[in-house]
Image (tube, rainbow, N blue to C red; front, top):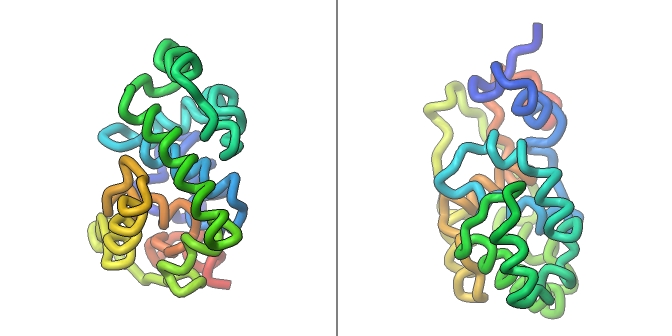
Length: 188
């Protein structure tokens, strides 16, 4: 039997996410944007809920194509607010549009969102060695710096804790506990 992080031992959806995606380095702008939006949608909610709604998010947000989301007007926002397949929070939906516009500006300035976002960890994964889940911080200096810069650039729902969750999800940090089988796999 595989040893996993304690948070990924009961729910099949969470186990699949943990085993296949969480902590795997991502360098694709579309996928980075997807996780950015999903992490901000998750604020104050359980990650399981977001994973359950992920397919609806993909369909509702045009597969997280940044240019399409950046072009959403009031009619599309109203449609999203009436969509039971996603988190229907007006501020979070408007934040997704604002964040898409900000990503487009970053792409103009840096060539890609990937080039910009990975600079907060020196362009390589931070390899942590946490013994217990209690050792894992909710934010770090890197996530605080990322949050501050993102907010300065017009991003919404991007506090240090959300940024750290994003960093964990996209492999900017390896926060699998040391006895988890994925910790070793992602270190190789």
